[in-house]
Length: 216
Image (cartoon, rainbow, N blue to C red):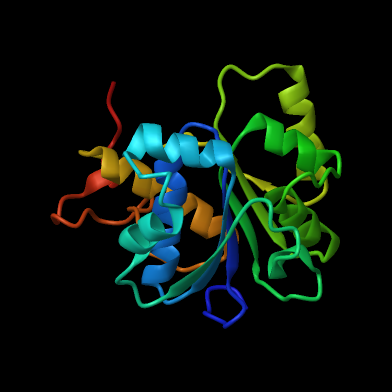
């Protein structure tokens, strides 16, 4: 049911593309809303979490407890090689899956039905069961194969949300830019939130915000 919490939870995948903060913020946002998440991180994803956010990738489960503790929701973490995990089976019911950020390698594997690790298998399960799949590609520039793979997924009903933050809400911090993108992901998941100011809404400081004429 769109916008309503259930006990099924969401699968969240984090790959080795740049932009690990988006995946982390999505987990925090979902858990802050009371959702349960099933988290799968590739080895390359752990490398990026270490390089971009300073996470201790040698103590993975302890690091996750430090970073994802204290929210009303909960999480379960599955190692990337755990092909017997619950999310690898279509009989295990979830709301769907978001891969944030998604590398071009993972995107290609999903587009062509490959399942070489748990994250790819979980995405394949979501597709075959007709559940919602949201992918946030983070690569630039894009060549023809990247675009063809995205088109193939879009034609299967996958929501493609490129990691391109907007500026019409006049962000003042990096956190606001991150919040905008994660909010767009939540929109595609059908999850209600207040992470960013929508077009036409008044700014929280009482100004007219983006209702004003945009000037260059």
